[in-house]
Length: 261
Image (cartoon, rainbow, N blue to C red; front, side, top):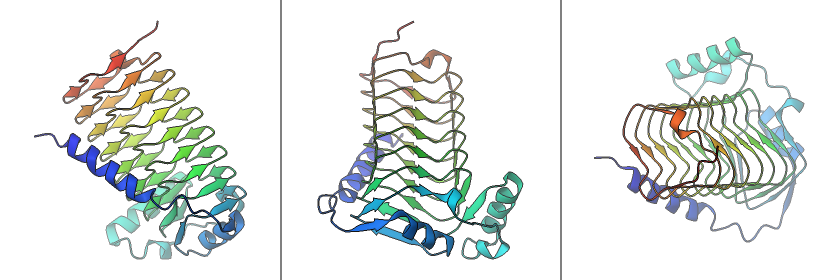
């Protein structure tokens, strides 16, 4: 039996919990303070704060070192280090958690291998956000994240579960050639501009239940290896879903498609 409806409920409950404290943002922290924590290899755990400035990992030094694999397990650590070295990616093993906060700038986490968990649940990013070519070795939570500008996950790789449930994408959302190795949840997300999933690969279950695509959504060449759920999804523009490949069941119960040519 497919478990997508239960997973939708679980994701939304987690999202509601994550966003519960978002109405008391008072203190301000500079982006440079957070970058310094990451550079020192410290875990980042921030909740209900205002982040002033750009979070640009290109501004700090993150050398790939065998010592950074500690705590990931022998096989996992060596695999992540091998990939980071081979692809020229920088490596962060500490968890990154910036929840229920407001980032008043851009976020540039490009070509980064995240060994620990990543959590931006309930956070608003005022500028553009780019995680292009990043690799997420563990779970990634973007539950109810609000991307005010463009959001790029182009050619990123998610090894663990990832949730974009309830997200609001104000600008263009780029998931072209992104690889989802585990459950990918986009339940009730809203895409206000173009959503590009061209050439993306969903190796496990993909959940777009109740998702709203207000502009074009490009699924040309997208591969769905597991169960694909689009129940009650709404498409207001072109989707190119006919050019996607479904290896398992695809559920479009009560979905609304207006595929303009």
